[in-house]
Length: 218
Image (cartoon, rainbow, N blue to C red):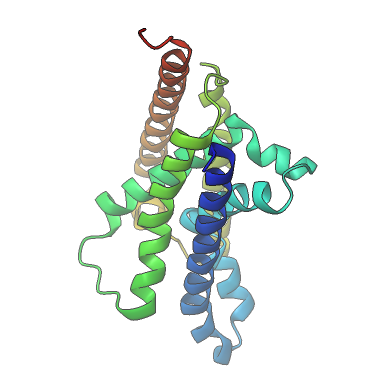
């Protein structure tokens, strides 16, 4: 099997897995709100989780090259920088969940399945896709600074939505409980982690590109 066909099969399989995980998370979070007349409220809350937004981004990045590889959005999804940043964000999601949120989880059944997909399966699938199938050597050292725009916009949205709705997606972003100073410190630490990890991705990309260019010994 050639590399292009293997990439197509991989991306199709994990695009489907990603959409299933997102659907399970939506149904389990939002469906109970329907009888209360708060479907719109909880739908907005659903899309206010960094985990959900980032899994949605990765699902699109995996899906578009499969269904429309020659289209403008398909070419966007195949861009090495786009794939690197999407992988970076979801890697941080998986690691952050495991370290900060997973302890004491009592999820069972479909809830556990959906949770495992978005926090474990998809981060690993995205990382392997980036390492194995994404062209190497195209990332610049300046790019990780631009990759901070997405989390910065998310933090601003979380603050505005949180104060307006009185609902916060994560305890470590709950401004009323933590206070402005501690919240600012948390955000600063998260951005630094993302920036350092971004430089790590660039370093890996360049290292693998150099290895690819090195001729095999005769």
